[in-house]
Length: 323
Image 1 (tube, rainbow, N blue to C red):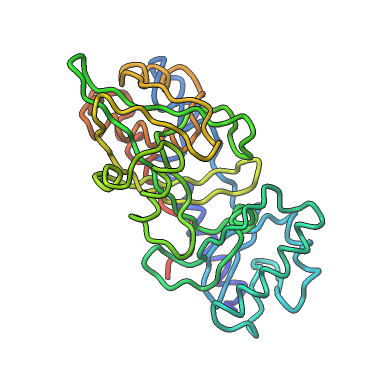
Image 2: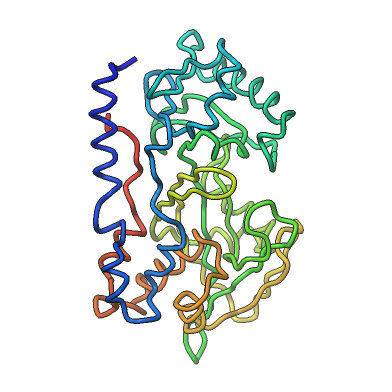
């Protein structure tokens, strides 16, 4: 394990990076914004205060953040976790992804029985330092915010080009959803679980959420990525989401097949922009994906107030130690 002095130095560097003035917006910045501003979407959650967290370390690699007030629950499992003033580390005796994953699954099952892991999904997420880095272990999806680990997802913008301009298919989440019920969403999208490629996951989500046939779904094109770091009710969400554009035939009508979408509406892109400027009815991460869409399609540009801050806010650096 690194020394305490080294951990403090690293913590200082992380905090300096997180506190970048381009990302964290001051009251003075707010005062000079014309209203309404798209930047309001990035302000829906305050900056994460990482001083309230301990690093989560697996195999000597910093892979997440555990809230200080959650860490005592993990101290009940000394054969799985080692705790100190700066870190919650997976026990070094646990070697390899399979052994670590089995130990974590045992702990999470017990924490679930205590009511500490709400919204259990029976879906495993990979845990590691990056998308193209080795998977150090696997973890139940519902527990990832408790450990602040980096997760991934796919966002599919369903687009229709009509004579009167660009339109976007918008879904409304079902009222029984564990996260963000009744809020506005994409045509399709979802988390990126272990054991399936991004392209196959996109096809699966398109069918389940919107009834898009596989040949049509495969026409979606990767266009960008956004990052998310927020303290949500379920915990610390740290994620990278891959954005895709899918142009659909004018006569296509989405049809939900898994009960997770209450309704769909084809919305003019001007209305999408107006909602983003004045309301909080889109999910936070989807609001960012839609701002990204507006920028990429040239609907807002450098003349937009806070244009550079918007660009920076869509792709904030992930606050893990540099290795």
